[in-house]
Amino acid sequence: MTTIPTYDAIRAIAARLVRQQHPTAVAAIIGGSFATGRQTASSDIDLLLLFDHVDCAWRDTLVAEGRTVEVFGHDLATFTYFCKEIDAPGGKVPLVTMVVEGENILPATDAYTRLHGLAHAIDRAGPPVLDVEHLQRRRYAITTALEDLVDSTHPGEALAVACQLYEALADLHLRAAGQWSGGGKHLFRRLQACDAAIAAQLDGAMRLAASDLPAGQRAFADVTAAVLAPVGGPLLDGFTLPAPAHWRSAPAG
Image 1: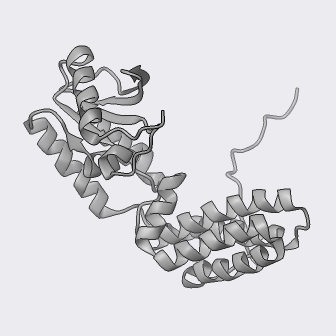
Image 2: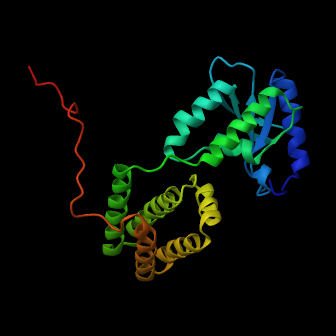
Image 3: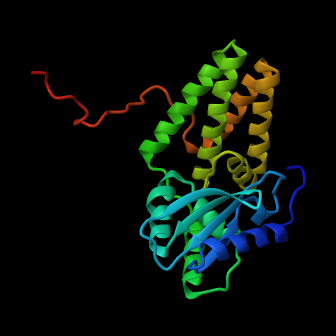
């Protein structure tokens, strides 16, 4: 695919798909890149379908009229469970984002109104606050990863560590600011929206790590210090992590 389709064309494909394959849906929300105007020639269609009832939530990948479509099927109860019990504890709520950013292409119903209100409430509430233990784990992991990066003389190994460090730093900065995180391109977008300066600093460090390792090592040290400072700084000495007492095999014989 070389031509970027218009939103109207994508909307028409989604509408036909819903009408032909899911006529009992009470809401059909187009999310993702097409909802935010960031689509590319190969972007798929993210489509959240709401039903009055489903036996279980489901996800389906299919091709409709030459376009890949990711379909997510839910009712209000399964949507609530996925968002609050599965996604939110990890700091990422992609289904909520689909509703907040997307458009319902079916006539509005009471079920959609409740879904819309629920999604916006979860979005406004932000992620769970990191407790002391989880914050210490993150500080320790970042500190040791930075040591690995700074000590590395192997470009390939250093780049692998830099990728790990980028994600850890971006996610921590967002969570510490009370903001939802994301994965892949969504992580960068959320960080840029939250703190453009840190996003630019982290992006620059990553690019340097690939092109000029010593400069990249210094840049990562600087951005790591900036991210860790508000949450207690680096952590090595004194960090302990006891395992649960039941983590043991039964005696042999």
